[in-house]
Image (cartoon, rainbow, N blue to C red; front, side, top):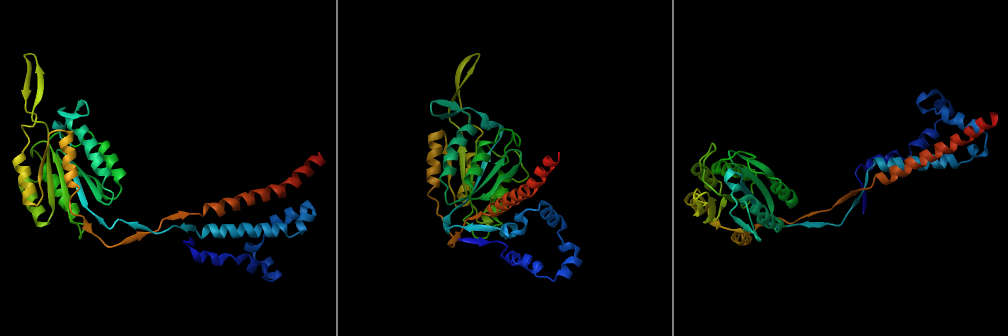
Length: 332
């Protein structure tokens, strides 16, 4: 159906009739209501068209279209149900320097941890149709990249555009948890789930993981921690090839304690397949119950009457000026 945002502006439709019906003396005494240029131009043509009612009808149609455009007509679409069940998920991603280690297999090639995370986490984000997502990046500090939103494409874009070293090279796990808890605290009814992905231990930040954990427990935030990194990687040197553990700095004890104390779970991701499996397990989180909501999309239509009014006005001005131009040629 069609509705008007400013319906009261339609009251201006009979305004030209009120001006036309004013007594002649009042119209002459009121400068604001005089249109001498238009009258003079019509009289100078000397044609029969000026005496007809066609110009008056045309001007009336233009006025009608302008008033309709000013009233902002809009098409009110069919009601669309907003998802009634969903999760409140905050995702915290580690952007420290160690995330550049190329120990993750993706397809048939080795990539660094962040590139693998973008692909696998991107698939997880794509499946969150009825969830509200937020994105936090942390290294030396933690900052909110994307607040809670249903716009999965924006969250995915922000993740894809992330680069290592954006916020430093260290790891502030405590700050990331504290920031998530703070943003969750702004919403009263929420299941408050944080998914924290890191490959190291807390080496920076103003808040320790233990302090952040106390706040998370008090605010009833469930934290799922994911430790990322392979167990074995071949390292080449001048003395040959040797096996090393690229995840030696991963603090699994702290991550496990954080998850267990908040009612969550700790996962270990050694490759892209195990990371994908972790996200499939996270799909089984209990959804939050919300009230049924509906929205009706609005499509603006004001540009249709406005464009038609401008086209008619321009055509009318051309029609009025055409006899005058021909008269000038004949005199020459």
